[in-house]
Length: 198
Image (cartoon, rainbow, N blue to C red; front, side, top):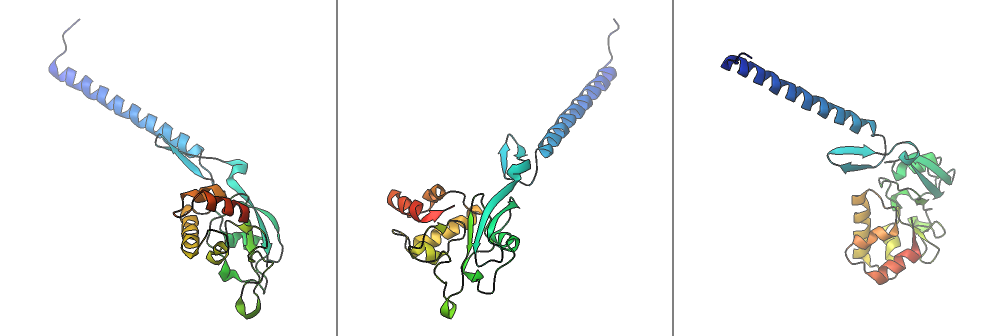
């Protein structure tokens, strides 16, 4: 077998490097296609540099809209929808609605109840719309600072912390998530479980 010259070795080396680069690019492109094929309008989880998103029915949330809306009921909405989308889906707020008492920009969580309170005398929130101190469970996703302040063990500062934490998280699906909020201990968590619903 004839001995290769230095120029031939250099050419073969350059070809080998080029083939390796093309192969790496092809593998990277294939990984990118695999990543995008898993993406849809749902929550995502990151693993090994790829983003996987669930598709199909998991791409929706089901919420119960009640209170001062035209058509109270249970509605299916895309993941990422806001409280305002749920209110619109329920036919919009009635003239008696006190929309400023809820956070319309909060992100919806699956199983959440959206309570649109009714306006009472002199612009107060009417009881019976989910705002009374002992009227029943309060919606975790739409509870105002004032409503949270009615729960045993929750003061104005902790109520504000809960609302801020909920907004940072884009909504909450479970009362148990509130154990991450400063000022909430085991006894307070029991009070929250008794008075809040998803």
